[in-house]
Length: 352
Image (cartoon, rainbow, N blue to C red; front, top):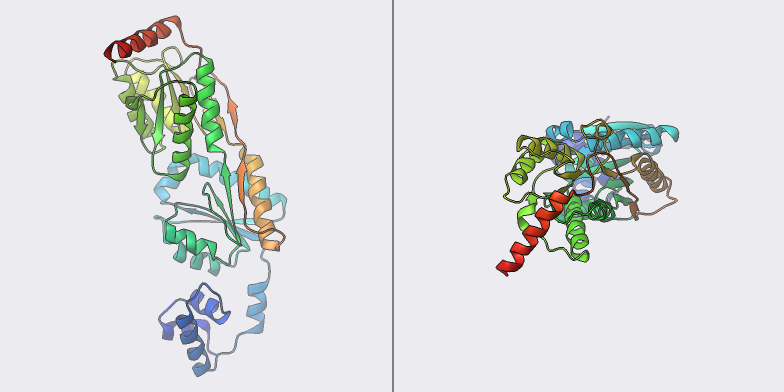
């Protein structure tokens, strides 16, 4: 009996593409669909009714797809904790989670083909996106919730934390403690990083505090990058009295880097993180950070995905709340630090 694999070999394409073409999916170009249908007719292909029934049946399985390198996954505790929250929410609703990752990020089109072979009902996706990736995802037949990216389609919902509000809360907390010379670590081209950096700049500006470019450090989100940033800030002639880090791992590294330059947290420099990882409450000092409320967010993700799977909801953009958690890594500015800041301000005015 002729199978879709025989047709795929003749058409020089994948079995997934053949399956989609035979179902007249718009994900396959018109020319490719016609070619595959011609080969199917030539070979006398007849679909297996049982197999077709299985394809259309619900498997009660959801794919959690981390489309970054396995090296990034091993360092990204935030995604791992998010996976736990999503898996728990799925289990409460009678669904299993299939975890998908690779040694390197793969093209979105290839990723969708891979996921199609596993017959999942839908997927939760974490990935960077190009403009062409966005167009492909908007047309996907697989019900999908993408986390941390601002995009939607008929079967595509995005769920993002309110990164702007999170950094605003962190900066306003430091301002309330008397800090003005506040650094930001974690500027980058990542979509989430852009929102966090813009929030820092705008919140400082609204407080009437000019941005000092030497206090802005562009980095990735890991501890090694934080260590580097902490040392760099500690080497400044006039170090900051506070630092806003774009992730908890960055903050932990910053604390270590500052320590190597003879600066203690929070005695000399206050530091805030972002994520509220489980380990942040056990660092020394315990980390003031932004809680992403992952358990609540995990339920929102799964409910949105099940809405797409059942056809009760269409694609939408959802923004989840965040909350400031105050611990021991921040404190009110000391008189000595305040005098240093005022002295620096007077120096700037004289230069002007």
